[in-house]
Length: 492
Image: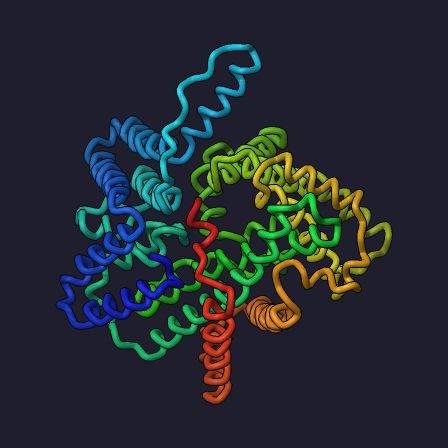
C-alpha cells in the first residue's frame, strides 16, 4: 500500500477514526492489526517473515535478561537468524551470481541458479530495527519488553514500517507502552502532523516523480547523451532521491504525529552540508546513527589507531552500501563515501594550515558556500554509481561527462527533449524554489516546516497549506502523463 495511493487515502482515515474512539487499552491492538494489514497489502505471505523476526527478537530479549550468563550466545543467535533471513531474501542471488563468475574464471561448472525471489518490502528496515532492540537489551540500555503485542507493534508500526525512519526501542517502544496515556485530540499536534504529510506529498508527487522522468530517460539511454545532459540528470537524481526518501519520512512522521507518536527526524537539509561528515549527520539520520552505534563503535570507532579507525570507517560504509541493495553499484557508492571520510579526516590538519597560510577568511558566505558546493559535487559524483544499473554504466557515464562536451544543448532547446516540456520545466523550477526556501528556513531557524508555520499568522499558514494542496492536486500525480510511483527506498 503506497502512501501516494487511493487505498492509503481510504485506509488512514479509517484507522484514525477507529483509533480515536476505541477503548484506551485496545489502541495498541488496533494499531498492530492495521500495521499488518498495511504490510500485507504488498504480499500477504511476507507477513510471516516480519512475524518470525518479531518472535525471535522478542524471545531473545526475554532470554537475555533471564540467562545473563549466556547472553552473548543468545544475542549472537538472534542476530544470526535475522541476518540469515535477510541474506537469503535479499543477497542470496547476488552472492550466487558472484560465485558463479569466479568459478567461470577457473573453468569450473556454475552452481544452481538462484530462486528469483521477490524482495520483501522494507525487510532491511524492520530487521535493523528489531536487531537494534535486541542489542539494546543485551547492553542493558533498556529492559526487555514483556508485552508481546506491544513489541510486535514496535517492529511493525505502519507509518515507518517499510522505509523508516529506523526507530530505536528507547523512543518508539517507550511511546507504545504509554499509548493509553496519549491525549488523542490535540489540535496543534494534529495540524502539524497534517502539514508534514502535505509537505511529504508535495516532495514526492510534484518534485520527485516529475524529476524521475528526466533521470530515467538519460540514465537508461546514457550513450545517446553528452556531458551536459548526464550532468543535469545526475544533479536531478540527487534532488529526486532526496525528495523521494524525505517525502516518505515526512509522511511517516506526520501520520505518526497525528496519532500521538513522535518519530525521529531522518533528514536535516543534507545538501546544506559543509563536509561529507556533516552530510552524514543530515542524511538518512536513522541509518547513519544505527550504523554508528551498532557497527562503527563496536568495531572500535575512533578509540584506536588511525589505521584501525580508517578501516572501521571503510567497513561501516561498505556495510551501508550493501544494506542499500544487492549490487556492486551500491557497494562502490558506500566505498566512495568511506574514502571521502578517510581523506577528509586525514587532511584536516593540512587544510587548516593551508587556510591560515593563505589568509583565507572562514567566517563569511563565500567560504561557507564553497564548502557546500564542493560537498554537493562530491556527493553527486557518488550518486552516479548509486543510480547506474551497472558499474560499467557508471564508468562510461563519467567518461562521457569528461569527453563528450556539448554546452550548446543549453541554448538550442535540446534540454526540453528529456521528457519534460518547457511548461513542465517551469513547474519544476517553481517547486524547486519552494523546496530551497523551506530547507533554507530549516537550516537557518533549525525548525521544521510544521513548527515554523505554527508560529506564523493564520493567513500565512492557510496560504502555504492551500498552495501546497493546489500544487499536489494540479501538478502531482493527476497531471497529464504522470502516475503514482513507488518510493525508491522500498527496494532496500
